[in-house]
Image 1: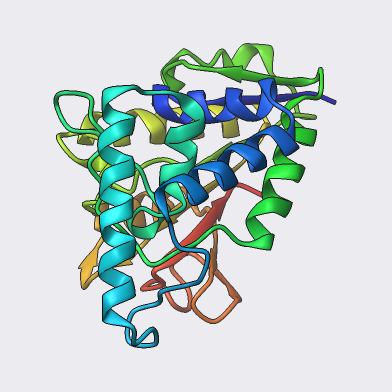
Image 2: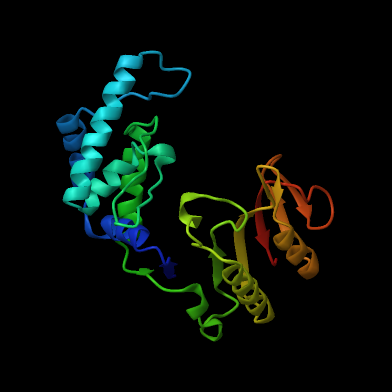
Length: 243
């Protein structure tokens, strides 16, 4: 009956509130306006498939110009527009607070318009509450066995943009495990997205914790289920549950 969406990253909260406070058509119109204004790509320039190198350079220059202007006059709509053209459609800010992701190979597609429409419908609901808080402040005592807690933490053994500069430490990882165990003791279901292995590096700490608690682990490499400690514990992408 109610959704609480929480993250400590203020930029992500900014994007959630963009959906909450704007109409889908206004967001889409702004993106299209910037595409026309700067000459951003309306076609997918996927590496090894898009052969027009001159156009690729043209699109890169357009992106860099737009990124530079955004950093001089920051606003959320431009921030969101930038992400469609950034590498892996991710965001990253330097120590000065400037957006510094390089240009990617994407464009603004019909599927993106659909996502925006769905996003605004969801976030505008009165029962959707967006919070900017530390996960350790979750009061488990306020929850019941009718609640479900989904966790999508930074992956401890990766160097993704959100995990740079000690964005997620071993202390954070340990405290997350403590929270999950507390949820379980209180009869509250949880699910966590994570990775058991990334680029040949095993998340042994995570694997051992799952084994110790006998959590269920769903491996997405073969879309198959395995109990932790049995079957394929080397799965890269995993979904961990206590039910």
